[in-house]
Every structure is written in structure tokens, then in C-alpha cells.
Length: 354
Image 1 (spheres, rainbow, N blue to C red):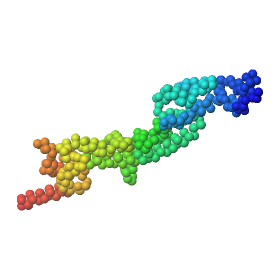
Image 2 (cartoon, rainbow, N blue to C red):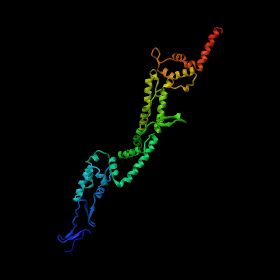
Image 3 (cartoon, one colour):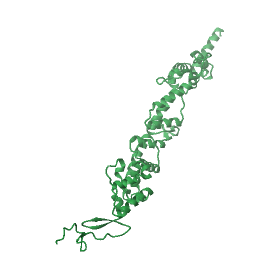
Image 4 (cartoon, rainbow, N blue to C red):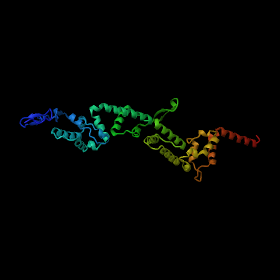
């Protein structure tokens, strides 16, 4: 009887069975063996087996890029347990499908307690073959974060920049808004120049945070309110995180209404405290001989008049305000005051015939 067709070069003829058969399977606990009709029994290491578990289609997000290196698997107890069971099945000839392996992985804390971005980063960071790619990813992220830091006014060390680059990659943060938000904790006051000379160096924010600070401090000046660094930093950070700068405006207005209570109804988002007290400003300018532009809410007279009430509890009237000015040394020593005093003196002397 003629022999049947040989299934492949690796098959051997069995005289006992009178049929083609596979040679005896090697036995070595350190390897698994798979059959190939041409090559025969092919040895497979644990590293090769781990690599072969990667690339299951149909997974969503970063999970679709899972690449299992043995070093990454061995770094986690849960993954190690799943891998060992899959390896034993492979050695026994009852290999798991990739789907079976992934489903078992999903039962472990490594999967359940972390999102897909973390899982992808964890596998990549523990795979020696991907060290170069990971280093490149981190460097690219550092460059991007450094650009954003300059834009928003964050000051960050190289060491912190690297740490932040890794953490944002691990957490899957990638949008402009997300990355800028992670940098807001590094926004702080630093020495900045506002002119030439040492006297023109002050503490301030820089970048877009500095722009927000300038607007806030201008509002504070116009409304006669003092805001501390915490107030400025809070709202500058809020703006970078997508907040509205007008929230700071509203907060300043509320403070101004409480500070200058007699004029609370006149202080609004369209009328500042200095504008509400324009009549006082004009009287101060005329009586003391100073330009109106030089008078702001930091002026002592403006502070006094905008908070004072008359005997009936109403805002202080102009006659009372001007009387207070005339009773001051500031008025008496001003050009306007001296002229009026001289005029009155001359009138008295004239009446006396002198």
C-alpha cells in the first residue's frame, strides 16, 4: 500500500502506526513548544510568549496599543498571576486566546484601578525595548510644557518639568487647556522690572498671568481697594483654567461697596469709585491747586469723603468737604490757600484803613 501524502517536512513516518506522525515533543519547563508542519517543534521563550500576547484588535483608546513585555508583566503581581496561568496552558498545549488573556487581565487591580492612559504608560515605561520611544515622548512633552509655562507666566525648574511631563503622559492629559492647568501651581510672584533702576523692580506675575494681574490692579486702583497677592494669584490662575476675569471685577466691586458704603448704590460695573466721587475730586483739585489727574482713590481726602456721612447719615456734602479742606494745613500751605488767606487779610486791613 502506498503511503499517504506527507503533511509537511517535519512529519515522520511511524511504522507502528503506519501513518505520518509528529516527533516526540521536547520537555523543558523553561520553554513552551509550538508545532509547525515544516519546521517541527518550535521553542518559545516566556519573552516571546509575552510579546505574542500584544495587539488584540477591538480595544478602545490607549488599550489598543498594549504591548506586553515580560519585564512589565513581572513588575505587577496581578499581571504575573495571569501570565503564569497562560504560560502553563501554553506549555500544556491548550493555549489561551488573546481574548482569554485580556479578559483575565481586566479582573486585576492593574486594570480596574487605572485608566487606559496609565496602563499604556506603565507598560511602556517598563519595557526596555521602548525606553528610547518613551524618552522621546517625555522630551517632547517637556518642550511643550515649557512653551506653555512661558505663555502663562509659570516658573518651573527642569526637574519639576520632567516630573510634570511624565505625570501628564501617565494621566493622559494632552489638550492645551489641560496642560496649562497643570502649570498653574507654578505661577508665583517674582522680581520684574517696571522701568530703569533698582527702584523700579517689584514683585509681580509674568506672562498672561501678569496681564491679568495688571487688569486686576487697575480695577483695584479705580475702585479704591487694596488686593493682596493671594487675591491676584487666585484670579489669575482661574483665568488660565478657563475662568472669567470679570469674576475678579465683581469681587472688587463688592469690596468697594462695603468699603465706601455711603456711595454703594453709585458704585457699579460701569462706574468706578473714583468716578462716583468725581465731585469731591473736583473740589480737592480746585482748593489745593492740583491737577484732577493726580487725584485717585489712594488720595487721603478721597478716602475720607467717600466713607464719611453727615449728621443725617447721608453722604458728605460738598460744603462740608470743602470746609474740612480749608481747616487743614495742606490747604493753608497750598498756593490756592495762601492766595485766599492773603486776599482775606488784605480785605481786613483795608477795612481797618491800613
